[in-house]
Each structure stands twice: as C-alpha cells, then as structure tokens.
Length: 372
Image 1 (cartoon, rainbow, N blue to C red):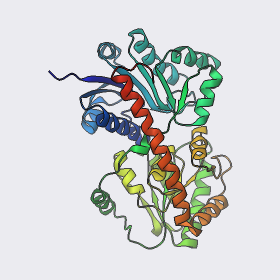
Image 2: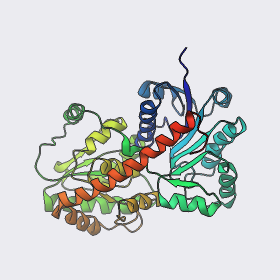
Image 3: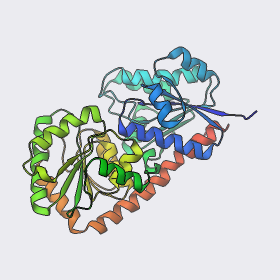
Image 4: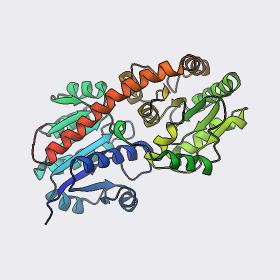
C-alpha cells in the first residue's frame, strides 16, 4: 500500500478570484513536484469546482466536522497564501482563518503560514489574537517586508521573507492563448503597443474610473495603443471595466475579456502585453512574472509592498490618481521597452527563487522535519 502524505490547504479558495486561484494552483503544482505521493485537501467556497479544476480533494470551508476528521490524519496544514489576516474586508476574516490554525494546533498537526501578505490590522484585539495563534506555528513565511514588519510589531519572531507563489506558476501553452484570443476576437497582431488594464471596485470609484478612462484615450491617440481589459475577479471587476470603457472616446482600440479564465490562461495572455496598468495585485504579479512592464495603482498597502520588491512605486492611489501621471509613466516605459523589461525580468527571477523556498519548507515539514 502506498503511503500518502496528506496536506490541508486553507485560503480564500473557490470564489473565482483569479489571484487566489493562481496561488492555489501554484502551491498544488509545487507540492506535486516535490512530494510524488501527496494527498491534497483544499478548504473551498466551491468544493466541486475546486475538485474539477485541480484534481484534488476538497471540502466546504465551513464544514468543521469534516475538517476535524481530515486534520486528524494530516501531515501538515498550510494556511495561505494570499491576504488572509487583514480586517479591511470585515472583522470576521481574521478569526475565521485563525480558527483553522487553532484546530490544527489542538490536534498537534504541523502548521505552515505560507507566503502570506499580512495587514492592515486595525484592531488591537485582532492583533493580539494573531500573536497568540501564530506563536508556536512551525514556519511563518510572508511575501513582503511590510508583512514581516507588522508581524514583528505584533510580537512574533522567526518570520521569513519569501515571495508570492504565483511567481512559479506556469502559463498555458501558446496555442491555448491563441485560441482564447481568437474566441475573444482580440487581434494581437495589430500594430501599436498592447496595454493590459486591471480595475476593481473600491472607494473613490467615481474619481479613478474617470481618470483611467481619460488616460487611456490619450494613450491611444498618442501611441496608437490597443487596450485590453482583464477582469481578475470577473463578477466584481467587469462592471468597473464597463464604467471605464463607456467613458472612453477611442472605443475602436478597446477589447474586454468577456469570459472567465483559469489563472494559467490569464498568465499566458499577460505574456502578450507590452505594459500592464493594474489595480489588482495579481494583475501586476502575473505581468511581472512574464517579464511585462507594470504600472501600479494603489488601493491597499499590499500593492505598495509588492511594487517595493520590484524597486517601483505606485503612480497614485484611488483617491489621488491623475490621468497625466499614467500617461507620463507609460511614456517613460515605451521610450525604453526592452531596457525596462530586462529590469522586471531580473527582479522577477529573484522573486521566483524566493517563492520556491516556501514549497521547500512545506515539503520538509510534511515529510517530518517539524521546523523550517
């Protein structure tokens, strides 16, 4: 009988968010490479879809009875990646993810806090809860320096800096990308730079939507650019995409991905771009992973934290964004596309190596070395 190594994965999975699904896909692929006989169980918002997409076992993220049963036989709990410990989206997010870790601690299952982005944590009570729960966890890894600093401030030591696991995600074959573009009627053979755009709903939406639309019109006129909108969380982002595109005058140069795609498919599409203008964190990560120049718009500290790792800064926030800054930054990139691209590739290669370290730590823990 084959001895299986059982690992449970806890995160924001099964909600059709391209970034989080990319994280899950990356971790699954990585663990399957390093542990041939691995039995992966994902806590998901949509277990059936997760099973089909990744060929793993999955259970409802709120089925605590089944979770306890699975934990009882687990070799490792992986919490993450993603931005799980933050209270910007509500006060129940942090307690939920910590409750899974508490169960694993109670059952003496090794635990890895996997390349997460932490914060903001505005509640002192929740900060104390994080400190108590993560104390004694076998390995704590984070994807950016700000997250490490926050955990140190909270009172945790032995925090290791890695990188977002999406940096070792592999894109689909070029033939599949070609098929998608044909299905979407997107002529990537057209002249002019191809500019990817990722927007999302957030506070101050009326302001930044107008500024982005104004900037894109100017970019089209100035550079004969082609614009492709990529909704990363389709159900939420698509409406904002329409708001931006409806304000534009140069609509003949605008394309919108109409269908929802897997993370590796979006990654392949990003490879076709010259520049990505992004609000969504993983739009920027996908582009950088493929060596594509990026322009980041900050709505959350995690955007600034990631850009810092590429030695870049955001061109503005959702509150103070100006169309002129977008156009100006794009112009600088287009003046030396290859030189700027090489800088991105060098940084992304380094981050890819750091991201893989987290898989090596998880593998070691799952196979019996209880400290990284």
